[in-house]
Length: 585
Image (cartoon, rainbow, N blue to C red; front, side):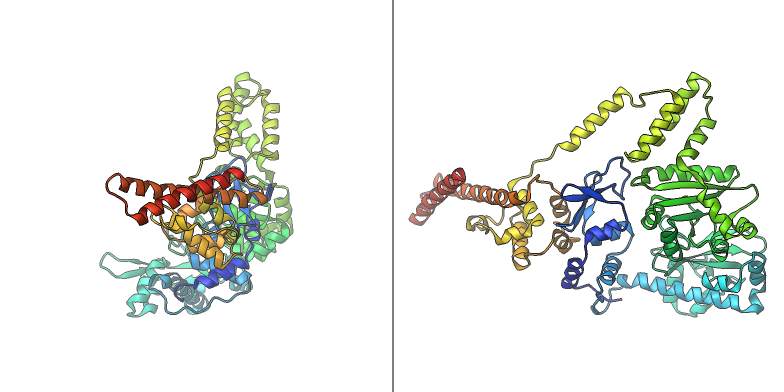
């Protein structure tokens, strides 16, 4: 791992990157005026307030305020580090990251953890191949119908009995032991030593989207609890973001047009052995917003597969509730409930992969599952039963983004309940107030306006100069930032807003610039220069006025010398001339 990435390389990467392509590959965008628009991936919203500007190479959400360059988007959406985001964009642009010297200690933690996990993965695979110690694990896998080929494909391994089988591989190297603990492979004893977290278990390595091992899952052999054990969360592993087998399933998901979400590793592995390669599994947690984002990036449809018992239907309902805010842009979610006593592993071995895929294509749609469940909780033969149906459905349908699906589901609710108006007077009034509030804009000061304009249209710096009078008041708030932006734009007239924003990442001015970059001045292309000229003239007028005020204040306390009197007269004349020019234009 190397040190700081050169600014010139970051500029080059962003210059070769189209933010519309980066974001459009992850969320649904449509044309909305000058920019592209979509539902924000960083918060739940009913109407699209997320915009992407190809001109600025900048995104902004008017709902939650999220904004930034392509680098910032990847960091937030894919949960990458700054360096990883640049590496991703550089790879897409065909650029090789330069060698930038020795790393800082904290820069090396992530790759060191990944190396430690890769070494552990090799250790577990070697243990499985050693039949003298792994016969029980091999027998278990054979009993589950897994072939040696599929075990090798999924890199299955074995954690032998004993408290320190893996720990001993570190020898006396304290740094390696510390990395093992940080990677979730070992845990500290009360006396200060370490013990292996995984013992007497079949091991399933968990990979990130790049195919790097970031964690492990273990299925215990014989008796013991817990039956399945996952690595704890670490700097390289967050359960709410990762999905088991996603790195292998990406291409099949895209090809088939849907992803299949199951509950366990063995389900995924058994399905793959029988030709169902578009399956992934959550990792001991309910399906999260991040999971859904990642899956919808690959295909517009998701099929959740659950057991048909009460526990399975409860899990399905939780998945439904979490999925509602993501149902925009033609996305679809369905639920496949299996026969009693079956799980994907057992059923696919019994029926085969083709039959299982047919079941998935006939899965219950989310709207049907939602209305079926809440209808079962009411008596539709009663008036108060139909009223209860509306009260149960309204908060659920309100989570769905505005669009055709929400409209159709509201229509179905009206047909089932007989209630024609589903929105109360208070709700209508609240919606009107919210819409009016969104339409109001906050007025910027002339300095903030000038900064915002030069940030959004850097070429303006080549068309108008900063007045000398302005530089006489460098202490004026914002002037040094405006001057610096002018300097950047004059050196690189073709620089984009996104590149400039990255120049100020992690600086005191960064957050301010992000807000000003997102400001909509409601101008047409040809109006920017006149408006910018007028703004600069206003700043010059203010600077002249401040200079005059300073000299007049001095004159009230002492006699001005001839040079100061001449300067004061010249300032009055210059301000008068400026105002005459402004009035004539």
